[in-house]
Amino acid sequence: MTARVLPSAQVDDRATLGEGTVVWDLAQVREGATLGRDCIIGRGAYVDAGVVVGDRCKVQNHALLYAPARLGDGVFVGPAVVLTNDHHPRAVSPDGRSKSAADWDPMGVVVEEGASLGARSVVLGGLTIGAWAMVGAGSVVTRSVLPHALVVGVPARQVGWVGRAGVALTEQADGLWRSAADPERYRLVEGRLEQLP
Image (tube, rainbow, N blue to C red; front, side, top):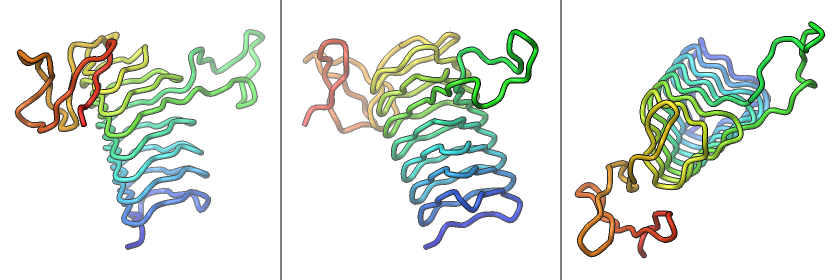
């Protein structure tokens, strides 16, 4: 099954789209971007030049992925999410000269496998969102997020843990972490959640 691009979408000829990927109306995929298999790029989304998106990712309407962002497999990017890439954004240099691409080094966001970014969240450049983590809607992420961590707020802070099903986990009497929605069991090891085999 080949990729499907809606007529009003703009996909550069130098972009790579995996089989089964769909790019919806008014989305833009720039040169050198790589989209894996079975991805959904929502209406009005922007995938910058050179951005890498893994397999089975969902990038919802009006999300903005600025280079050099990298998404692992199965990542969910909610509506109007922004992955930034510049800690010191300016249109001009101190002498008033217009800045060009040569005047800065972009710092991409890395979103690891299975992580979810809630609607209208913003992630600052150079950070990593760990595997299966969840960023609450409207959050502003200013620090990297541990795998399976649930973070919310402005600035985002960790308020719990989530399993692979995306549901908050609770600590049980045996010291393990579980949820009714997730058959897996987890334990805390040196401040990080690990899935038991």
